[in-house]
Image (tube, rainbow, N blue to C red; front, side):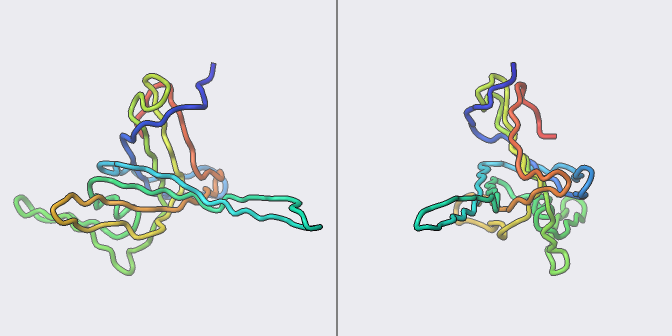
Length: 188
């Protein structure tokens, strides 16, 4: 008997991104190494639908709708230079020796490439109706739609966030996938 197609969604336990390195019109997409989105707090998915109405003879004759956008907003507790490089571009350079090590993310006019990336988030085990199971949301091809919220907050923690728009993959047309697992699985 297949799993139920209906479930609660409780919390988000992990999220990872990976650079989209190839999306051939025939074949399969390829991705770079997974990068942890540290301290994931929220993963909000929304979309836009454009509706056209045909009228004539003083009545509504037909309505057609088209999906025009899928967007995701991520809030996470810690800044990651590797995530910034994956979603904005730029370079990360490590230098020095203890006690004077440095890691520097630089974004320049030539390295601000806004590369496409995949995002996958997952509930904790038992975050769905299936005991011991989980749910993964995967957005297969994203590009930032606004500069990330970065910086500091006076006498408080600063939450980092970003918003990205989805495009369908050229190779298979996928925009978004939801996978309910009977047994919880790590993002792979």
